[in-house]
Amino acid sequence: MKPTSNSQHELFMETIRQRRSIRKYKPYKIPIEHIRIIEEAARRAPTDAALHLWTAIHVRDDNKKKIIAEATRQPHIAQASDFYLYIADLHRLQRLLQHRGEQLGDSHQALLLFAAIDAGIAAENMVLAAVSLGYGTCFIGAVHNATEQLIKLLKLPILTYPLFGLVIGYPDEAPPPRPRLPPTMLFHREEYQEYTSKQLEEAYKTMAPITRRGDYLRLLKRYVAAGGYFEQRNKQLPELLETMGFKILKRWERC
Ligand SMILES: Cc1cc2nc3c(=O)[nH]c(=O)nc-3n(C[C@H](O)[C@H](O)[C@H](O)COP(=O)(O)O)c2cc1C
Image (cartoon, rainbow, N blue to C red; front, top):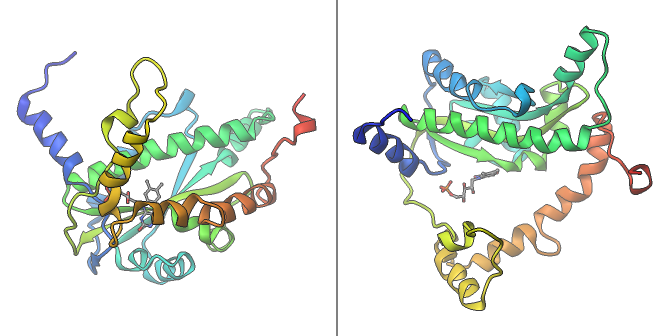
């Protein structure tokens, strides 16, 4: 391994420590040279089997960003300089195969999973490049509140599907670092370790500052308990995927 100087390592770790989700932006545009650097960071990210399963649609136009901000109910999309919609892109794979007389196999579900992985890695590379240049960023899962509008607005072809958004811009706030679960819950050594009541209690305490009221349970309920946002997303997913040409195998089709 190439020896890394301490200062290089420190700078890199400082970029990671400095990053936090920014939800207020100054109304300035990022210079195009910086946009190119940030995009190149995503392009250099690892990609499963060199498949490049993602595409990022860059939206700079203020009117379009405003429409997306309203549709997703995320005002910071309108404020920030740039918005990227990361999509799973099996369409390009299909085009590449057809170009040589081949067809995409029945592998849409598995490819979708790997597309989400590839896209997440590429986007985080972008985030770190942007933060190292002094910009603020925020991932936008709320694109799933407006999937159909985004598909239409950005003219997404079949075999593509919105995964998440990413905003980048000049930060206009400096929030404190947000809490994370304790390392022992996130890293299990050698095998999965079931959680004790003490650990679960500790998790609620550690995560309390994530909401203004200091109530992590409230957040969990809003997103993932019965009636939470993810239930709605889960319900609409199979139908929307089918509309976009994804073949979702039913139980009886799996043998
Ligand atoms: C996949 C993903 C989706 C997210 N979606 C949103 C979103 O729609 N709106 C938003 O304001 N923040 C969103 N976030 C930011 C998280 O809320 C944030 O990362 C988390 O609260 C931790 O805060 P930090 O990033 O400042 O450390 C998202 C983050 C990720 C990774």
